[in-house]
Length: 271
Image 1: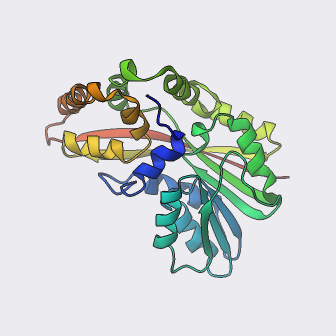
Image 2 (image 1 turned 90 degrees about the vertical axis):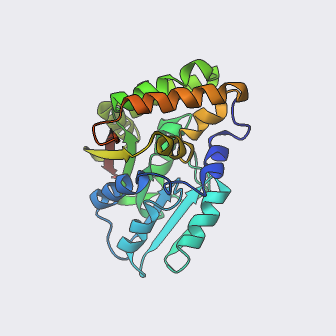
């Protein structure tokens, strides 16, 4: 069945292990986003869907103590833990907030960042317009979405498909085939939101798993948890064995499995 409290609940339950089980994932992706945004000391930045602070921490470092870094997330446990982790930085504020339409004053930020968030939202175009409205004239926005998935990872994902409810299948299809699934689609969203100087930066992140069990633990700690939770309980054990077997088949001579994830960072400026 679908998680009763949606994607926010999924990430709330994943918060304690998010990006702390298995290979690094969100942190290297977020670092490139922050680097390309060229955040400067004293600026006011917003991290939409801040999670466990993968982007918020380097954003806070970039603005320094004369700036301000606000992170919002709809998952209360994410907010609680990230606020604890960054409590020593007075320029940081972490609070519960809805990425679809943040309740913040228009024109109040120099930079808006959103790492691995937009494709979870039901109306990406409306969300991007709302984020753009939060920028001052000349303010920058950077949004990270996922590019092509490693074929080996896609093979594992397909094992879930017979067990997923139609609503989750539709949501995944939206991310795979909608505007968030291509450079041109994302750039069109930016242009439709009235942003200028739109550009795309591509990157790749390699994730290495030393044991099949490590992949399973990793998948429970990230967005793929939504797929595990949607599988009927009586199918879990068999699916888990199928996933472990598939990962086992993909191991190289050293016993590792390496998945290469393509990543897309899209940037623009408010006129």
